[in-house]
Image (cartoon, rainbow, N blue to C red; front, side, top):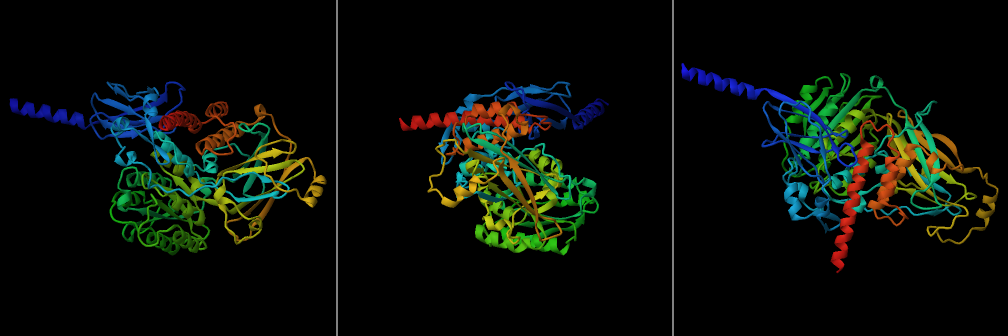
Length: 615
């Protein structure tokens, strides 16, 4: 009998442990009281963990019992909390500047010293790949746009860009206590990462334009022009049916948990957004390419998720073969009038078959005329090939995002679902003609790899960027007004006839702005034209969006150590951003301020290290 009761108590005890409990809460910064995204929360002594989202919130489910949670984040002091009977645990983390200051220069980045590396390696989820120098990551070289003389070159033409990969990638570097490589910093992608309150289209055109002109915060006497484009938002119920092909890299380089496991979790979020009229197929590639799941209705979510869950990494990377097969599957299930798209998830490390940038570019260009768009999702670090992935997205009439954590996947696939996957305007080009009676010189900030020849504007054979449902695009120009002396002014011989022509120009118009786009059902572009007034606002009268975009651009100039940064300072970036937060429901702008503070500390430490080296 005694044995029976002992066994019964044991079973009851096991049953109690088998019950789960859920803890929720929020993690904030002690100094700024802003939410912290990407904080690791681990159940002590287990592999059970989660991370905070952009609002600093988390939820963790685990077996019942009095346990402890460990809160860890790069640059902050780790905190252990005994849970007790609580269901909500809010935590405040304090910056640990000793950790951020312990850096050494490695190649073009910075690397944590060994003493700090030991601390970082204890963070669950941070495998050894997090700690390797980033010398095998590839980024295309960026030659920054300089100032152009408005008399000699009054016209500026470029393709719109709604990629946001660069900002998420920069965040990854900073969260790991490292400054990003200069060529990883693409200013237009940083600016376009955030949402802005642009006026929506009201007429038949799917794109509307807003402009704002004020002083340049970092170059006294110069002006900053902000151009905002807003695409029409299509309600989710009215979105056309989707024919999607998930093209997933399952090669050996995708094995770490911030790669294939994160790919699965991210695509599961997308699967949850699908409707019965949508379809999904899954193609994978490693040493060869294969079809894992034929085109399946979107309401068979569990079938799709089961196919994703069964994927395992191993082998070499035949990316070219995977791309060919994915396009073939998409074309075999093509939906006329629908959203036909390949969604590529990879670290970009192609090493078998078609693998060079030029070969991949030609392959994608041969496929873009089929009516199948391409979305590129980058994952991982250490061997990340940003240059290849940006090229694929650019030439494949698609968009490019970098997924560094699950909250970013939620932003891309849940919050921005329509804009990510549903195009409303193709081949969108901008052309500005500056009035030399008012403008001495101008500089387009960013968009270096989206520049077009002026004659390309009217040429419908020249491809350009796409805009999705509800997408916004922001472009910034820095302007040297007539009469202002600046060291940035190009030194050119004057033109006899252009100067006479300028005298007859309307001095109320700063410039004329033209937009060309193609409706989805047409290969013939349409033209929209605006004039922009020379009336500038005082800085205090500008919108929150103007000041915040200026802060983001100034931050990018500092990270790039740009020759055009003038008097840019981290303190000014922080001040501008703090006074331009706006509603910021998801906390992305507050997170930006935290990243600026981290970058400032790392920059100061790098400068000190270089001075010590010189001694």
